[in-house]
Image (cartoon, rainbow, N blue to C red; front, side, top):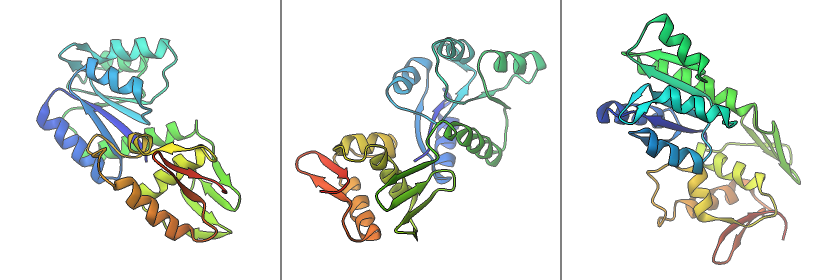
Length: 221
């Protein structure tokens, strides 16, 4: 699942952004200040981060500049009411990848986020495979024994995460953290439901095995 972070201190706008991006198929985390965003960004990979420029605890440009100097590579889209050329140049010079002036159309923001996420995807392997299971990450296609499978976004995300750790046990909590967003209830059975559907679609011989008291493992027994 492509994961996005929204950092915006206006609660109504943040809710609208999160709702829009989730409806477009992204997993979305959100924060209202730099401190909260920093904690979340250091604990989880994000394919794109949408930053409001001016936040209660500082200018997001300074934070992004600091993280870039430490090697942080996640694409960043700045949102701001400042539309001057100098402001846009400063955003790019300090590590921003795109810049959108308020007010904006939600459809345009969604497309810009999608473009930045595609850029982030270039750092990932283009193809993942295990035995006769092949995932083409660029095309978002999965085949088993040459047969194209139709997967939902969540099924694809769970399978991708298991493939990157083929042969290793993966905890349910890790799957929730990487394939869902903050809305997911860690005590629910959402992972088991998705894995059950995946097993049915992958057919025999079984590739996803339960690991008692832990989670799942992709591989042969």
